[in-house]
Length: 321
Image (cartoon, rainbow, N blue to C red; front, side, top):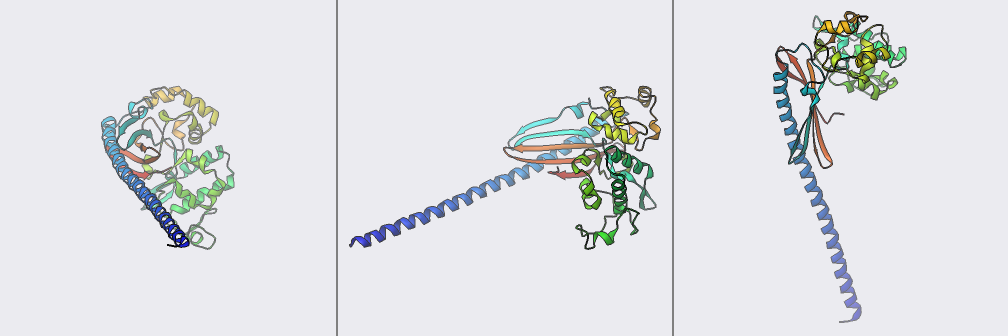
């Protein structure tokens, strides 16, 4: 056989080996990715099951600890102060319970009368005060509140600084949808409102919430921390943030047990004039659960309401930031 023919055969064999090697590597990478994908899907599926199980267990524990209705609650209660941590085949499972009332519920800006939502002027004054304390411009505050009211109400008449459907569906809007004509389901819905460009979203999330139950709007003073001073100052007339911080520092470790104890501790405060109700107990509880495995995690947040000795799941969010 001529030498040049042998060379051609050798090169052909080497090319075939190279092609087969490339195909093998490609198949191997695809197989490896498929295995990882399947593993993550299995982890996610099992993680969701674990979070749902934790939710059921938490619901039973809430019924046990809060029924009959407690006259006061505090952060020192084991239910709030002792997180649950369990090691499983699918990672570490952690669950914590937090009071959901230490925020300003934007849905409290409404009253439900005659089958429609109407403005709650007292709560509106409280939200304005909070935003002023956070040093936002009055015009921007007025625009945000009017846009919130127009977003929820059922009419199509725009307030002085508000917006209605003709704006949101028009060429100037990025939203391209009708206003909701319902209460806010999630705080992030505020981002539909154009006036939000004037507000710090990271800061707003610290003090605002969107609980669907209007009649549960109120702040449990026993559960406030020093970071909540602007919230407390916003709902109590005639006090500033430093005074609110001082009040929070004076809250007993086990909380105030009766309204009389609270009034005696702060005799100069007119609690009956608050923009939102001041409470010593809570009927809204967040149960936060997370399952972590290697670099993957799945989280869940469930909002429970305690009402008439029953525990009701109002909202549930997965992987919610």
